[in-house]
Image (cartoon, rainbow, N blue to C red; front, side, top):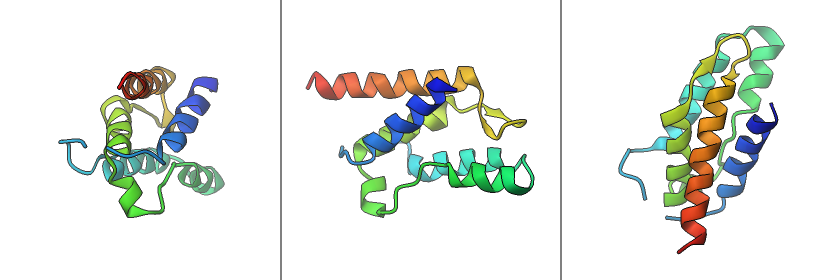
Length: 109
């Protein structure tokens, strides 16, 4: 659970960055895959799950390279836990490691 919080924090912190991805609009794909996972839930749990999907309100910011790369980590490593509507622990860890790798590359530039 702590790792999931770190992932969400990392994704929201990266939401202010800039840079390119050749995988199409990974932001849209990532929010879609997370939303579909929430659809396994019912009632208030589903509503809360959907509200917790990290979204970028400015389309220009969502399209920046660093955000596209960050959301590619989500798309590439997301495995849904239908009981919780969240990524599995292993999936969240893989997403976090991918994002940290991106951050390491940015810092070393």
